[in-house]
Image 1 (cartoon, rainbow, N blue to C red):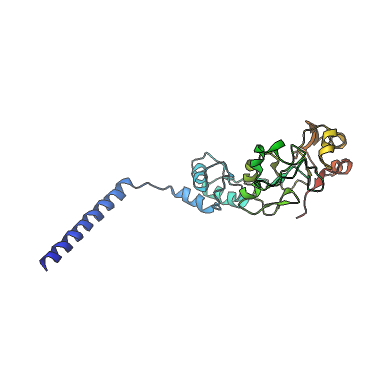
Image 2 (image 1 turned 180 degrees about the horizontal axis):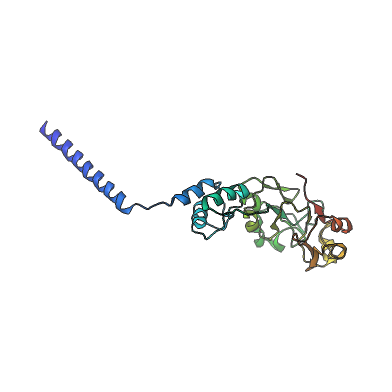
Length: 266
């Protein structure tokens, strides 16, 4: 009986000593958490997508609290989160235009030509290791194997008929698809933009027509007819300056290739 009692005392004493040691260590090495950071973090969506340019929501919350990032740094949270964070920081949120991802390619299966049938790994990033960078004749077109789909956390982009298509209502403009596309075909544009040039080919018109039935041939009709000077043709492809565009639609109406498309309706 004495042996059991002694063992219990030893175990209990050891536990008490360890408890006291851990309690003292906790007080000594405790890391003070900024309440402001915690409040900001609570207003962030928690996707940790990296669209803000930081490692995750914790990192951007700290950066905002330290004044190193704007209150509107989180593209996923949008204006609603920015307003709440601004209130925490004692600042004005200001206006922030909603953005959406846009794929600069309309080369669907029935419109683009292919050089050969491909049966390998279905991953756009792997196309750099196959002949001609993939089976499609256009070197600038969407490969259609869905690396961007894998990158999107919001189910906002899907490959339809060989081309990636963005669901503007689901898109949070986090930029993950932009970073993932090996062809650099995806960019963020204003959500309110009514017209989009759905081509990125820098080839000359003759070569474009041989590769795709719908690519931009750089004819400059859109550039000449735009009353706002919002459309320019650079490197044989039309581009829209959305800061100048008034959504009049003249560029789309004069395009002989019909490559300037109206944005999907809400």
